[in-house]
Length: 106
Image (cartoon, rainbow, N blue to C red; front, top):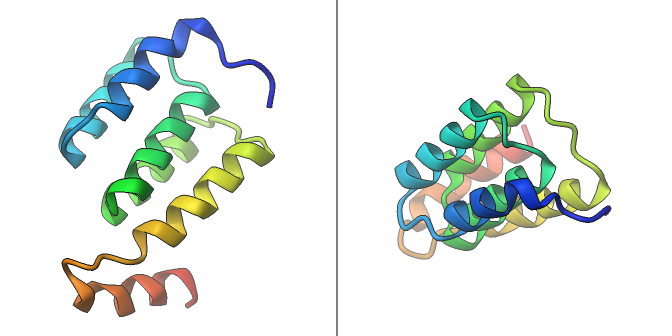
């Protein structure tokens, strides 16, 4: 992956510091409105969603990525796959896991 742009540094940090799914989406949408979204910002959002097990938020991040035509390189795609594998499991809500797996493997 090429060097991450400095202009999106503060957006990545805000996204990684989000403590709720809504907070993350709020920061991501603010970055989009300021035209400060690139694959590194999307990658930070995907990583936070995976680490926090925020499945629905991860799906929304990917919808926004697609809608705004942010192209993912191989590293960003790998971040997405890793986030999927983390977010599919939710030890606090094990009843959700089968539904999430069905979404992954229809």
